[in-house]
Image (cartoon, rainbow, N blue to C red):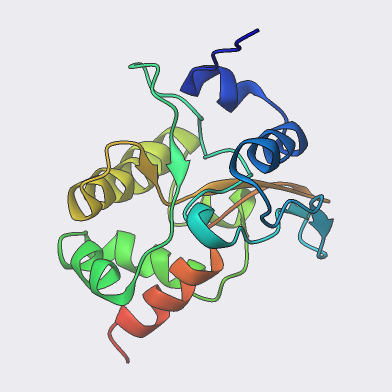
Length: 174
């Protein structure tokens, strides 16, 4: 018997089931269940050939209108510098928050007197702009930088630790 799974099928699976399928398909890897590190469920860092795969869903959506699954990726310092080179000052300032590696609550970004007045503005002006630039820099049409993290107080977004470290080095000091 053969089973065919598309990118869309895989994106709908739970992180645990995806990890188990990857273990069966690709052999040993870091497939331990997600652990709670105080910021909500954070998936373990994959190792080996799967280093760019993230077990958590991309934010705001795992799929775009094209139906292609999106993958949260890491950045190296060169890519981080290229990403920052063509973003607005407001987007760069917001990305500085993510360079710490911590998840950022949506409430801290959206609302009256905050960086973005509405969720729509955040998605369009920040998340969308950063992801479009990221795809240009990485030449990966399915790449996204942000992942959704459920925290006690609601929803937050985060980037992968390696991407955060690369951003930290690439950001202008001062």
